Image (cartoon, rainbow, N blue to C red; front, side, top):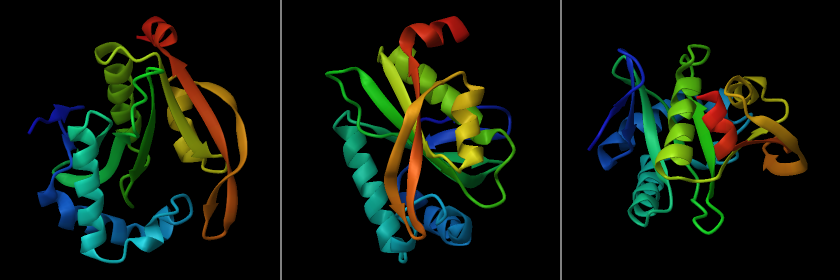
Length: 182
């Protein structure tokens, strides 16, 4: 299993079954903040739910359709980042991510996103990367904005969360744009 160092304290590691318990514990500790933005949080109530998530992520990766990694900071699991299913026909992918409580505001996810965008547009030779975020989730939206993504629009009532529907800001980065920013 490979690791990718973001800096001397932070690395990306593909999720594996041995990460089930730490990932469940991070989700559980972060539940109050995550439920504001992620619809699946309240459905992850047992370690088995996290095990199923990792199993599905591994299957998707084996079928060359995506990638899911843990973001590790100073040896602790801090969050998750990954490609949703890659659309090989249109050479595009979207990135999803979240950080656990206590790991925000350190630049971890911006660094992780930069690596995945570069991997998608340079190594995989995809044409487009998309990031969507609830319009009110300022911290999440700041990541694609820092990386130079273009705000392409807003999808109204795109996702149902426990407190109701939220709109999504849609950000895009094209391969030729990324080449200019690198």
